[in-house]
Length: 469
Image 1 (cartoon, rainbow, N blue to C red):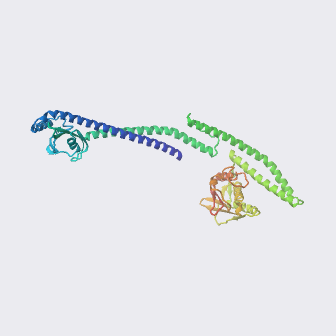
Image 2 (cartoon, rainbow, N blue to C red; image 1 turned 180 degrees about the horizontal axis):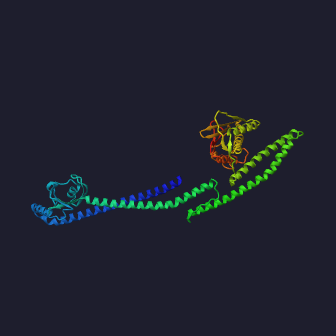
Image 3 (tube, rainbow, N blue to C red; image 1 turned 90 degrees about the horizontal axis):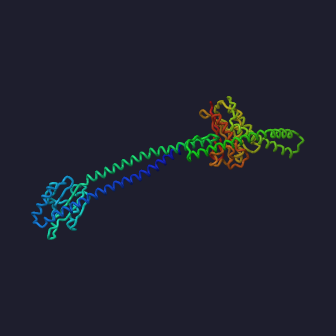
C-alpha cells in the first residue's frame, strides 16, 4: 500500500502544483490588468481635466498678474471635486499660490511633473510617493503660459492612489478567493477521481501478490468496464490458467512419483541381494554399489516430489508429539557424519551445556529437515571439507545452525533459494525442491528457516523452532 499511497501523493501533488502555478499567474495577471486599468484611467482623467482647465484660464492670461491670480484663487475655492482631487496653482518659482484643499502660499511639492511642465511647456505627469508625505499619488501639471510666451506658473491636479490601491487589493483578494475555491473543488474532484483509480489498483495489487505467493485461481471482483476492469479480467484469466497448469503439474508429478517408486524399490532390493553374493568380482561389486547409491538418490527425490505434491494440494500433515529435539538432531548428525567421512568431509557437532527443552513437533519430519540441510551443505559446500552443526536454546526458541565452508550463495540468489525448483548457479545435482519442502515443514511447526552467507565464507542455515505451541 505504500506505493499506492505514493501514486495518490504524486497525482495530487502534480495536479495541485500545476493548478496553483497557473492560478497564481492568473491572479497576478488579473491584478496587474486592473491596476493598469485604474491608473491609466486616472492619468487620462487628470490630463483631460488639466487641458480643460488650462483652456479655461487662457482668456485670463491677457490680464494683469493680479487679476490672473485672483481668478486662480476664486477657481480653487469654488472647485467642486475637492473631495476626490486637489487643484493647485504654482508660480514659476515653484511656490504654491493656492490649493483647493485650503493650503496657501508655500513650498511646492518636489515632484518631477512640475519642473517637466515648466521646461517642456507641455503637460507632464508623476506617479509615485510624495516626497513630503510619503503617500502614493498621481499628479498632472500643465504650464500656464502668458500672452508674451512666458511661463508664469503651473496648474496641477493631484490625487492619492489609496482608493485605487484598495480597489486593486480587493480585486486581488477576490481573484485569490476564486483560486482557492477552484483548488478546493479540484482537490475534492481529484480525490474522488484518484480513489476511483487507486482503490481498484490497490485491490488488484493485493490479489496479484496473493497469486504470486501461490494462491492460484483466486479472482478479482471489479465493477469497472474500463482499462482497470480489463486489467482485472486479464489477471483473472492468468490466475485461472496458472491454477490449471499447477494442478496438471502436481497431478503429473504425483502420478510419476508413484509410478517410479515400484521400479526403484525393485532395483534397490535386487541391488542389495546381488551385493550379498560373495562370488561377485570387484568390478561388478563396484558397479552394483553405484547402482544402489544412485537408486537411493532417485528414491529420495521421489519422496521429495511426493511431499511437494502433498503440500501443493493440502494433503501434507504433521504427526505432532512431544519430542527430544536435541536427541533427534544429534542422532541425525552422527548418522550423517559417518557417511560424510567417506567423502572426506568432516562434520563437527558443536556441543554445549544449554538446557534444550522437549518441544511439540513431528520428529520424522524434523529429521527430514536436518538431513536435507546437511545433504545440501555437503553438495554445495563440500569443497570446504568441513561442516559445523549446533543446537541452542535462545529465548523461547530452539535454534539449529548448520554451516559449511564452501563458496557460499551469490547475494542475488539468497531470496530465491527456498523457491521450488530453483537451483540457481549451483552445479550440484538435485530436484530443487528440497529446501522448499523443508521451509514448508518448518513453517507448519511455527518456525522459520533462513539462509545467509557466513562471516569468513560458506553458507549458514538457521532453523528456529518455538519451544511451545
